[in-house]
Image (cartoon, rainbow, N blue to C red; front, side, top):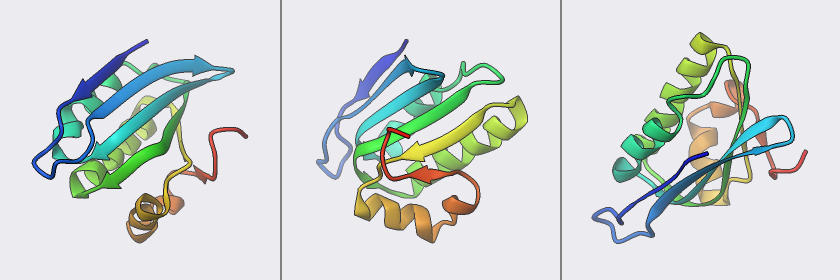
Length: 118
């Protein structure tokens, strides 16, 4: 599958990286670092070829920060999932990231698990 990274954004945060792996019956998209404006294009590229009927889990355990750009990227992926017919879930967000997701109402659209395991 795919792995990519971007240099730190202007905020000096950690390098953002993405890796995709198949685990059981899911495509696990593991994100690491700050999910900000610098991460949007690599995220969109890495998730662009998800086939219809897939189950996709976004592993957010290693995302330390998410700004409005990251939120928008998740919204775009959710819209694509609904249009293209794949299931989307998220897992393991750190408290700061979970708060952003909760404030934006993601729980109503995308299931959020406590951890990557079921």
